[in-house]
Length: 327
Ligand code: TYM
Image (cartoon, rainbow, N blue to C red; front, side, top):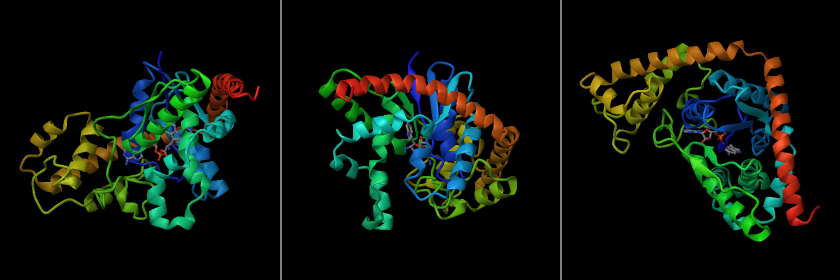
């Protein structure tokens, strides 16, 4: 079976609809047909300042989310990145063949520097895609299911893998991004030109998977649309309505076309109210599952997962150390 790896960083308490539709939803389906590894990438979260206690809690909550959406520890290896030290060992080796000029091109880095000024740029933030490459290459990953903001990082991982193989002989599988046609970029509710993001300062911009019904209804009601009336998919002219159509079609598993037909002449009020009702139902079901998962269960799943991940990772790092002359 081909191998899948993907992860989410526990950099805030909020996981939102973008994480679900861009990443988690795909992962659940892939468990049946692939060998899957799903780390909670806690080392990545450190690229922005974290309160240590909150980071521990967020890490547990991300793992809980993995389980509540349907990732099954019997089928997938679910673990905490920092429990497998080989990620950091490979990170260093890969840093020695990655150009700073390549890292300076990464959109996430450029955006943060633009937003907060160049003096805010930490080396960890610049090097973060190399750690991501290490996560992926360590396990001979074939496919990396992600939202479209991460594709650039996977392209870099591919380049680093090719370079290493060329220099030291065939070692790494060249991974491929796996991006859904619909859902790879869920947009912000208050500014549909931007992607939905947990770092957004406006809490109305995103729907957290743990939002309560009244909050969900309020956020959908406030979601920015346009001055028209037609419920039609047209991301250029109607980005807000198109985003809501995308979300509704993903939750209901029906085509956008069929929704356009259903809401012909209905107006935005009725459409939004249906989007809100559908999300309330969907997220209540998720939250019921989420609330039943104990911290103790998460601890056990992560410990078992780390044991399994270490077995594969340690073999690979041994091979890499030999190739570069450390062993
Ligand atoms: P992160 O934690 O920012 O996001 C986790 C996943 O959610 C997707 N995503 C979205 N998809 C659609 N619409 C959105 N608005 C949206 N927001 C987030 C992301 O594309 C991602 O798939 N660097 C990664 C984490 C990582 C990783 C890895 C991923 C570290 N190592 C190895 C894959 C493989 C990140 O920061 O994702």
